[in-house]
Image 1: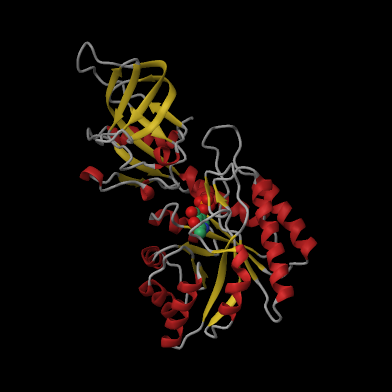
Image 2: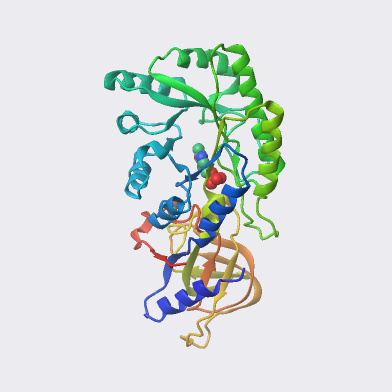
Length: 401
Ligand SMILES: Cc1ncc(COP(=O)(O)O)c(C=O)c1O
């Protein structure tokens, strides 16, 4: 991975303060560019929402807003409040995820968010009860756990036994009950297959499945129309540096053809993108504090570990990385160094699980250098074990692009 000049410049500037360097550096220009190019290439009716779970930092919310996303996909009241603070009105929020509390649902109805994505029959009844109490209707989508999964994906959200949505086979049991709840306006379906997908055809298969389900529902239930179809997120990025990201143009072309084939023009098609939008707008930069040789392997120990950047360990993959050389004076004659070899990176936590990269080839690294992990703008600090060992939170430095 080549560290962008602007990021390296900032690292050198921060290192010059003499404090141990351990931070995220964000430059959200790539995110803005991605939203702009997706907006041009997508078929009419496609609405792009930013899945803020990928990175809830205000710089990302602001970029999403300035670059013209339709709204924000939220998964908690905390996210809802951050999105509103960043300037999104509640009617630009869509709410997904299992286990929404009564307090969270009440806020949604009171504030008038765009759609609540129902994850179970119980949730439908709970939401309905609140709507009756407040005498306010709510638009809803029904999330389906389709009988389909993408084996190659990093994380799957449908297929098999899942906590997400209602099993496809139970649709005829659940849907009539939801339709009978008079304060819930059924607007359509949400079927999210998987996250981190690089193969366009896999995600298009999911679109086709939702279209077929939509046709089935509309032919079985008179007066029901799914005018919103939500495909979730899932566009992947090239963590393994294989030379390609997800190809959104191919996906857009495939969807366009499918819309024509099914005669689905005039509907809303929702994309809730997190990783694809945010990943390349962030770098985790952490100082190498120690290098040890242990039984034939080099262990490189950094200032931040899974408390600050958990994703590589959680998903068992190495992120692209590079070393910014700082040329620090050696502390003693026997100090270890890395020269053209495969090594292990970890942080300061007292668990063997604290791994940042495994068996990764590094040209050269010394104590005092900065390890820089790329594609860290999505699911970086936000999914890390920040409280473990009570280290200080890393800074999140935002560059003006
Ligand atoms: C409901 C929902 N929508 C959207 C996303 C964002 O997915 P991605 O980052 O793969 O685009 C997620 C991720 O977990 C999700 O659970």
